[in-house]
Amino acid sequence: MIKSYNVIVKLIDRYDYGGALQVLNERGLDDSDVAVIVKSCKYAVNFDFKTAFKIIQNISDECKENKRIKELINNLKHLIKGDPDAIFSELIENIKFQLVNEEYIDFLGRIYRFKEAIFKYIFIKKHLNRRNFSLYIDAMSKKRILKILRKKYRINNSNLVYGITTYINRYHDSEERYNKIIRLLNSEKVTKLIDLRNDTIVGHGFKGVSKEDLSIVYGNPYNVLDDFKYCLKLLDIKINEYKYSKINDQIKKMLDKINNS
Image 1 (cartoon, rainbow, N blue to C red):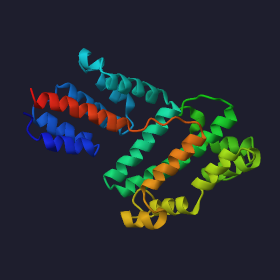
Image 2: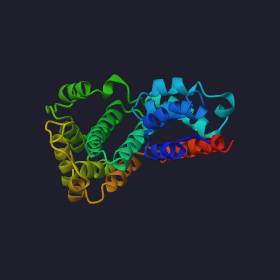
Image 3: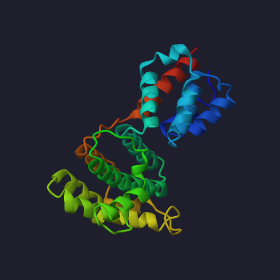
Image 4: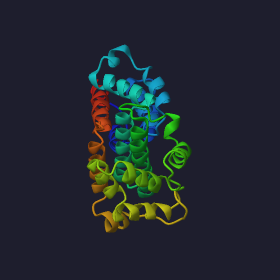
């Protein structure tokens, strides 16, 4: 029987893979397939996909044949390539983690990041006229986009979101899906969330944030996830929902097997 089994499961349910890995190591399970998966997830949730992929290669050949593990390995390959479906899905999962763990300042930081990433994606997709491209390309950088807006489209605005909003209104106003996204992400309630973020340590201030603060602005904070998923749906981005919940189920099955052996 694994000592601290319930502790490990609780940590995994909260997506605290670093904490779970530490307990596994303390229980002498550091070389187990479970530890390899947990360690890989520890790096993946911090967007270090290359390290996560490298670590998962250490799993046993038998475990590599598992459906969930195959999906995980394939997903990491797409994340390393910067596939928009994979990256945005990961960001949605990451936002959920912050809510589950009541890490509201980090949650607001992810909100800001998501909004900016969506606007960047729309602009580059239309500017390059490409159906598929990596989110890691140089054209996705803020500096590069502002330069293109200024030189090609005569839009002189140092604020990335406002600049791209002007671009969409000027050149793609007839595409209703973009208008819907703009109305949502530039809405008063999202703007107020960004203002909360700006007053915290991840912005320009030192204020704390409570669940009540978020609820006053947006209602149930989980509504943010629903709205962001709606934006991704409008952009035809396929969301890989419950990725880590599925992985966690697999980890717990493996833990149960060890625990009952």
